[in-house]
Image 1: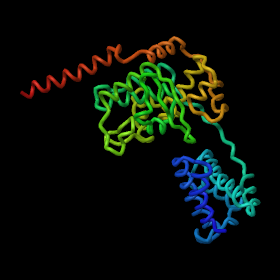
Image 2: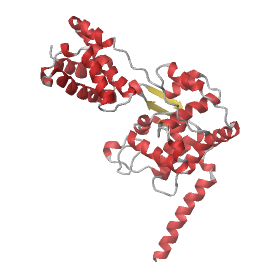
Image 3: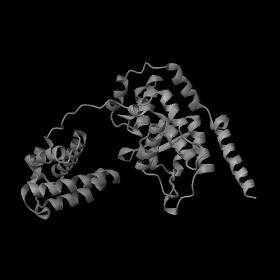
Length: 339
């Protein structure tokens, strides 16, 4: 059986119809197999269209994984992700082609490579406040960025989840927002009072009218299109660089550090592990247990102030009102000068 036929079945039948895999995951799988097929053809010295399932040997896969690390300089995490994609194909072969079960079983025995876990990068309460303060609210995109940063910290959502939020997912009356996470699973997140009022203010007064195709998106970029994961990360990187010293930025993933910070805040507040797991959308509780191993004995007083800040509403924030009034006054003065 040709490998191309098997892959066609994998991408058009197994992933979408049998497993219900998300489009984002399918796109990542396609990229992985694009690299693998070119390598596999070169490894066997044949054309890609001539590849068969029998060419999926453990030696070929191990050589590909070695190529990723040594030649392409990929990390061990990336290497393991590529292996997981190949194993996903092997599971389909084992399920749908019993006569090729031996080949599939051999691929599934290839172990993941162990690697050192990176130190979890999260922000302390005083650092969160500095990042919030770094936003220039007088600029056109200031309120939008300010709202996104608050939502990232409050919800613990991933950058991709924030970028794909839809207009109707936000419920200001119940102070909740629905998030579509990994595996096409929705979760309902309760928001702090400040985050809720910020989103409401953004929608009412600062949201740019998008082009028709992106009318359903909550956050809109300067091109009047929906925000992207890269756009969210760019915003986070911008304000982290403004607020924190260069040395502190090392090891901080731009948007993900807000997610970690949200979890750390819940741990220090005494929230149950199940609540943290559900808020972050972890599939396994093992991922959530990582946060319980951190040393969080730092400035409880500052953390309490941040919690009070998040529970307040922007209507009572004199600083924001002064900045907005200053901008309006500046516009009036500029108009008077032009007369």
